[in-house]
Amino acid sequence: MALREIVVGDCETLRKKCRVVTDFDERLRQLLDDMKDTLYHADGVGLAAPQVGILKRVVVIDVGEGLIELVNPEIISQKGKQKGSEGCLSFPGEYGMVTRPNRVTVKAQDRYGKEFTLQGKELLARAFCHEIDHLNGIVFKDLVSEMLNIE
Ligand code: NI
Image 1 (tube, rainbow, N blue to C red):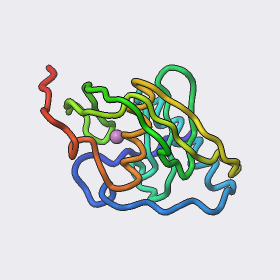
Image 2: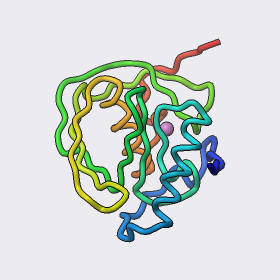
Image 3: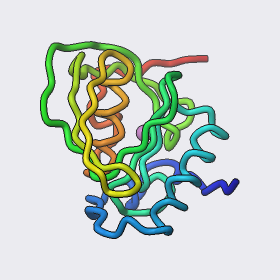
């Protein structure tokens, strides 16, 4: 088990567009394993590689239904709308209302490079959108309609 340090606050690293993964090697699998450990240790729902300082298109998500690993994920279709509160491990204690699609289909590769598609609705759809945004230098605060103060 290895934890990586989570990048916190407004910083350059979270604003970069991440590179497509082309090498499905041990190094990638180590990154995914470390991101999983870091996600669970932080009790989060999702984590994108730039949040641990790695500018690659890699994401891990667990909305309570098991771990999902996404390499080079892309949203290929979306439907409906949901408005709900959102937060981010890189902005601890900050929450805001964000409107997202209610259903999302994602195309991605697994840790060995095999392509797959996955559908998510509600919280999972929100997590897909939030984490894929990170790969493009977008953070949820860019999309917030109103910030919430949670004591
Ligand atoms: Ni985030």
